Length: 531
Image (tube, rainbow, N blue to C red; front, side, top):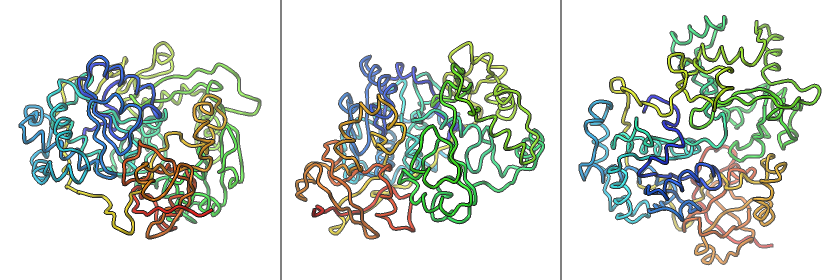
């Protein structure tokens, strides 16, 4: 929609934002440094608007909290767009100069009604209106959302981008879209082509011209057929189709997001696991290998603000452990490839050749300063703090109409609650890094002791209705299965909803049945489990 698969601005620019929308992400737990930037902006006078089904610590500082029903995000943002249109606050000069398909977008916006949408979202209409007017009237405004949303409701992301384009909040300092990634190199991995249908630099695998350029550089043929996603590989759909898997710092067996990863790995002829620690996945591996820690090898990584950084080697790894690039090069050579790199810096130089927006970054300049933000090109070696800062070519941006959907999943008397499968505030104890990090163990010791096998967050009013107390074992039933867990009473969870982290093992498979996966809103009932 905007022509760039990344956060548009730098995090420090939040200090320049007049309005900040935080969408469905607990910044305090998941991205505390960014939470700090948001709170400092609020203290300087920015208006803070928070949306989502769960309350959290940043909400306590919000001017407006839109606690919508699960699955109603796109409807909420569509209603805000309708308010902006009704008040004539569209940035028409920006739209006419830089955007396309505006007429198609407006044709769907007229189907939104503020009062009806407010009732369907479970949010007061005056709050939606106030949020929309504040965002549209701001000189600079930022929307922050978690890329975890992409696994659930992509319509909500489209609706957010539509809102940004409608108000012209892009191409300015402190004004844009912040697609937050909780781990370094989620951005960098995508930049390097770790997407099923993309090559490094986001060139399409199906594009013959782009593919031929890579074939010349790499002196080998590249299939035109896109690859498959990790979730397909580690699901019942991929079971038996994949014969060998190499998992590096990856523990899919411990997360319900991958459904039945254990069964899929058992079907493979060869499973190689490479990690700092033994994990649940190690039980299914034929070969377990160690890997270098941070500081034991010289590497680059790319953060959520497009910042490419260099981590220098400061200690020698234990005997027998070599950097990952050397391992991959040797395996490639054994398979017949003519890979001859003398250092990781050589690989960085090649990256600049095949991914032009990295062409100005190299080990020499990354070592001297605090990284470079791409596009970092040879004619712009200092990088780009925010995208579209100069003349935007043609109609770069595209509206995508989002049809009005009042409820993603409709409850009934038999299944009156909506179960939300999402990111845990704690990444839960099955994340092996928490087990081995003294700081994280200390931070999360209390909830891990209270709920050692995971939990389902439930609003106290709902718990009272069903005679449930904190710590009670409860059974959640859907029309396809059931699971047993522990109730965690929390005012953070909206009434009518239950929250369960992805990291509670096998929940998704148990409650959906073995043939389904990837569903994030499930209609359920709850009952106290007899001891």
